[in-house]
Amino acid sequence: MSRFVGTTSRGIRLPIIKQGDDLANIVTTSVLDAAKGEGFELNDRDVIAITESVVARSQGNYATIDDIALDVKNKFKGGEIGVIFPILSRNRFSILLKGIARGVNKIYLMLSYPSDEVGNALLTYDELDEKGINPYSDVLSLEQYRKLFGHKVHEFTGVDYIDYYVELIKKENCEVEVIFANQAKTILDYTKKVLACDIHTRNRTKRILKEKGAEIVLGLDDILTTSVNGSGYNEKYGLLGSNKSTEEIVKLFPRDAQGLVLDIQKQILDKTGKHVEVMVYGDGAFKDPQGKIWELADPVVSPFFTEGLIGTPNELKLKYLADNDFKGLTGAKLQEAIKLKIKEKQANLVGNMASQGTTPRQLTDLIGSLCDLTSGSGDKGTPVVLVQGYFVNYSQE
Image 1 (tube, one colour):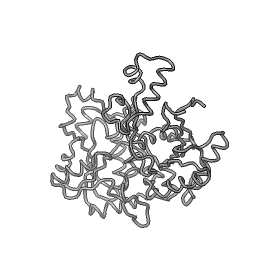
Image 2 (tube, rainbow, N blue to C red):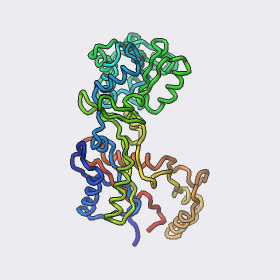
Image 3 (tube, one colour):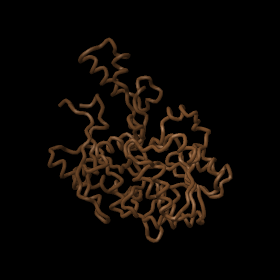
Image 4 (cartoon, rainbow, N blue to C red):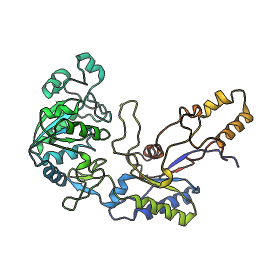
């Protein structure tokens, strides 16, 4: 029988997950119930993806503001610190900032500009050009910034993040001085103790600060790497990938979930005879063309996945073949020629012109992005996504 559909992505509804729930069994049962209820079958190499949020919730991987404050206080010995390159986020960073401020006496808050690491903008480059400001070299105080640019609110949230962060810090009885700069070493003019809050550039930032003479340099990935007073923790990512749960509690990125994905894989195999792949996913990795926001505020798209999801796509570009190798063919002859070419393709197409324009990204990043778009981040109630046909190509019936 001919195949009429390629890749499909289905959001799978789950009950509301709470701490201690048997997530592997719930996910397996929900996927099988969905297949029966919607009239589809599972196949080998289907992908079952679970959002990191429900994994962390089932683990009870939470911490309080006081837990964060105590860890910061112990690691920086109190006093004053530099907090540099945080993202502008009520959900992602504001609650962490409260904990940091609660653990020290003064914060030198150094914000990157015109936008943060993931694209949340304070300003536009046009505004910088108009004022003759070079973001690669110019350092601005809060007073200079306000004189040049005034008060501006975020396009989507309506929040002035500068005022918002300043007030959060002050409410914790902590002094604050705001600096605008894009060179990590700038903070050392103010303090030698630094907490680097960037996500994907954190290792470079910490290296530069250490080379330039900082006394203590830590990142968000160094806070809550072990339990504090019985709190949750993440030994690899610390506070990275966390989200606000309540005004005093943060949900951390999940830990120790490799066993979960293997358990689900085995349960599906035992119940259906099908060998599926399973992954945990967080933020996708894509950029919004309107707001210029890069979605990936988690340290990775997928922290846990089964072995079959290791690697990158190895695909030929169909339009290249149609316009070049087989430009003289049409109709059924063209289709058969392309199918044969796909069947005979090399195991590694790196450098092959016929693969140009295909996406050289990790499978987990590609599939995780698809799943993030499918499940959404609101009230759809589908924290599990079933992806089918992802590994099927044009030559397969």
